[in-house]
Length: 92
Image (cartoon, rainbow, N blue to C red):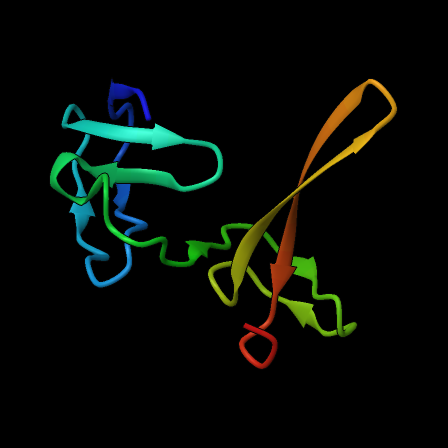
């Protein structure tokens, strides 16, 4: 994962941490795992927070800041696609 400077405050996505990330702090970032503290870079993956409203695979409407996100990667021929799936609290 590349090391970057956080442009805005957020939450660490490592399992067991969930601590605050401050603007200007050095962090590890990747699309699949999200933003993490440098000491949490090798920790197990936690759930990435859902910041937008969406629909879960079970059909339930999930409001912002509820549920979690899962990254789904697929290939179709030569094209590569990443899609974030919303999970409600029952399916997560």
